Length: 65
Image (cartoon, rainbow, N blue to C red; front, top):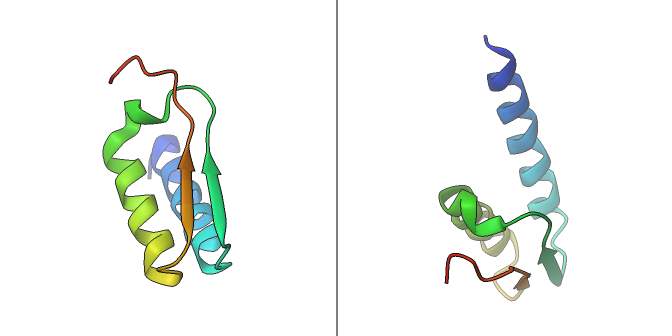
């Protein structure tokens, strides 16, 4: 297993833990979240799976819009 695989696995576990907390609201910010669009969509789907009523706020600088 490569070091990058370990980091990716850790990030997946962290995303899963966050989603399982069933927060009513989640804000995503820092850097430019849209640069990792596929991962962003997967995370939002995971959040919505555990709490369909959750509100997800995305803060972006708009470079990719």
